[in-house]
Image (cartoon, rainbow, N blue to C red):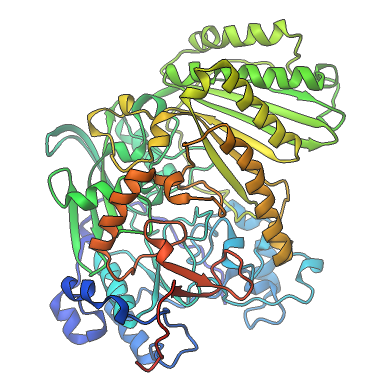
Length: 635
């Protein structure tokens, strides 16, 4: 097997991507026939309990897969997991190819992003083929590489008709269907045993118009293919002198017209302009019955409601999105500093004397967290990471990103906080030096690797800042989580209805509209891929217990759909809000009555379950209806 890095080409227009599936295509291959939506809605309990798998007699024959490949113009792939080249027991074993992966050389390319199977949290696949970050002579010993939760086939979609054919084939053959874009997936939504994957990564068209009219809106519009990533949008902003909301840190390779906006979509401009979903004017997509439709405020309103914040992998497969934009380039006034404590904190000639006591360290963290409301009120975005270093040692590094502010204005803005910190006798390990940075920075979309960490999150509402006692309890809860041996990442942003304005997406979790702080808790286990299945479950449970400390001080709030924990309790309310979920579930049953689109912890997903041998929440098992009747493969 050769290791190929597919080129990411930004197309000049959408002409090539708009070819649709025709009756002529269907006449040549009945398995890609469109569905009768009324018939889908009436089938109900007559459906088989489980999706078919490669070992079943009803699995499509080689001839049928070949016909599907012809229908999608040769875009059907049957890939093996990339790490298979590192396993002597696998037919793909190749020392040179393995060295390319394990040496880190692949990280300097787009290899992992352009791989049809890889996701950035590979433990969700079931760890049946360890990611290369986990491979060495010891970890390889006695292990094998199997397909596990990776899809059996992949359609590398570059045209609408490819997606339509895949959707129709999977539905008509009762095959599990999954959707993958860039693979920035932390909950196992882009993998699944025995599945057919629709890979939208190469729908790379982008078209900017300085003045366009969609419905009641007239102004700058960007039409973006679902495979376009942040770095590609950044390059377009620089070239054409405009600003749009895009996913930012910690990576420039998130796709902005895929799962990012479908789950809401935060950015460095969230406190000023709202979420990515708030800027969507029109969406083009393929439905569960194979049709290619457009949704806007005035057309297909159910889809328009659900797709703007109701979560990905659920209602349809998005092919392109029309976003609002702003003329001119935006800048960010920035500043950062670090404080540290404990014997394990960094110790150099410069930092040793700057180390502060444990009590003063936490006083400094508390001062920043109290100041977070000021950041979002000023339209800014704040990073604040508490890193557990072991042995009662911690570091804390906040960063301020203030749209439109000069360096002098940033310094003036944060001076009250800096004064309060210095009055407490807290030393800076590194002192703040305000600068101005471009919002859109040129990029190449590299340096993205599969990881092996787990995390969970909680949104902390503005009401916690309106009550001194509750704010103190919130800060104390964050401290308890960190001192229990977990890393805590805070992101201060406030995409309220007020800043979202007239175009606010109505399916957004109400907790996101009320938030000031997005707090994420990370396990410090550096590689969960190496844990036994029992220990992995134990670590997931331990992580959830820590987040429970945050839930206790935020009753009624929730978590961000795209960055949540796999064991999140009552996720329907937590991700969407109780009333929103009722409406989204009603739409789901209407537009996808057979449950073709399924992923963990998405709208309507409670009707299905992945049946794994060990009971872990991973993708290496058959997808079956919960409580459905057993139906023989021959029926």
